Length: 165
Image 1: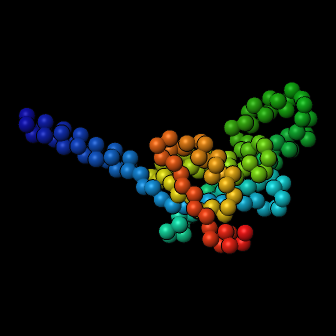
Image 2: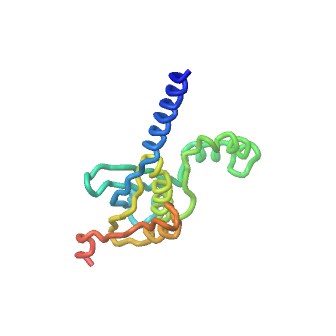
Image 3: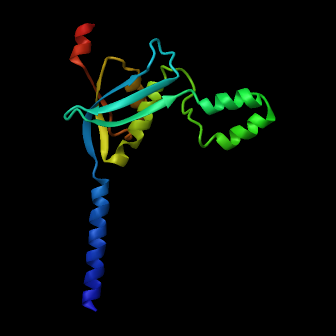
């Protein structure tokens, strides 16, 4: 009987250790920037990328787009303001490529929000942000309180960008 109880206790402790491992989160310093394929913030597509400052490895990225080719084709074939298009759109919504509405400049803050919110799922907190001097994204993340009010994200300026100003 004791062996059974000891075995259950050992299993419970092993399971608890595995859960604690998963909950281990490392605070790291990252560089973040957004980019667009066209100049002037008029692009339909944008990307945001987080790079570990220590290793130079890409930690995470995401792509934003204001465009879906299937929506354009369906609108031209069915008519954009028709009941057929509305019915098609309802079935298409889960597969639509468009994941951003709003200005192209706002893509950078939108992608930063997505990346920062899922960082803990990967075992990281991006607590220091090396920036190119554009503080919109940093201020947005500060106001968002991604990691709660007790843990604020710090901003460090890239000396190359500071030197250019």
